Amino acid sequence: MTDAAFYSTETAWCPGCGNFDIIQTLTKVLTDMHFAPNQVLLVGGIGQAAKLNQYVNANGFSGLHGRSLPAAVAAKMVNQALTVIVNTGDGDSYGEGGNHFLHNIRRNVDITHFVHDNQIYGLTKGQTSPTSDSCGDSPHGACNLSRPFNPLLVALAAGATFVARTFSGHKEHMASVMRAAIMHQGYALVDILQPCISFNKVNTFAYYKQHTYELEAGYDTGNLEAALLRSMEYGPKIPLGILYQVTRPTYHQQRPAIFDETPIIDKRVSTEPLETLMARFR
Ligand SMILES: Cc1ncc(C[n+]2csc(CCOP(=O)(O)OP(=O)(O)O)c2C)c(N)n1
Ligand SMILES: [Mg+2]
Image 1 (cartoon, rainbow, N blue to C red):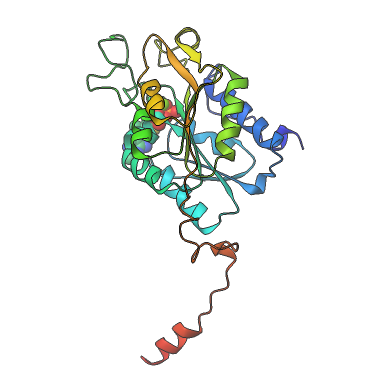
Image 2: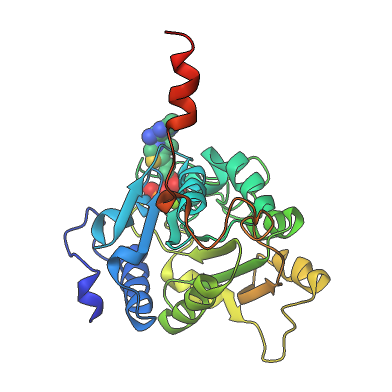
């Protein structure tokens, strides 16, 4: 199978948008990992990034704004055989979906969360998002009078078992991080720096190229303190790579009585006890 099996070309994205690099890389990774389209569920909320599932030939679900994670978690709970991947924006994930972000991390459900972080509300034409730079650093265009949100630091503090960052302009790096995140057992967050060429004139392709660096070979992904320090590097130099990865029991593994090898959707449910009960009220 080629990645064309996953990819359909009609999109509503602006020519040059970083979302194209993300969709091309993701479909290639899924193909290289030998997934068939029916084995994958792609989930989004609302926004330009969130539309990705509508352009890929796999199972898809578009939820309400900020509600991609509850939908993804629910799907995984009833069908653990599915590979569930969320693709959605920084606004959808960290703003409107902030509470779901925090508490679904704690559950460690085995899903992958790719946040297309263009540091702006793209679909609604350029308002400030939680990750927009502070107005002190970036007084032009959308900027935060509030303190910018640090998703990697928050995810680490909430107990995420896989925390990474990549850049849509480095396709090979993005592919390797995506692959590792999909293979990870448990919740995996990948914050993908992504230029919004129409509305974010500060955090451009050139800006990310200049301001990012890859974690050095030998970096210890099991060291939480080191990961916390790297997650706070956001300014002249932003680290790219897997900041943290540990093995911890997933939501399913902690509840073996409910989640055995047969997914809930394949379990036969007998209505007999219910019918007997209802018969008493007739
Ligand atoms: C409940 C609700 N509030 C607000 C909106 C308007 N709205 C649609 S998309 C969006 C922001 C999307 O930003 P982001 O998640 O960063 O995605 P991007 O378009 O940048 O990829 C907002 C505020 C909405 N559709 N529903
Ligand atoms: Mg955005």
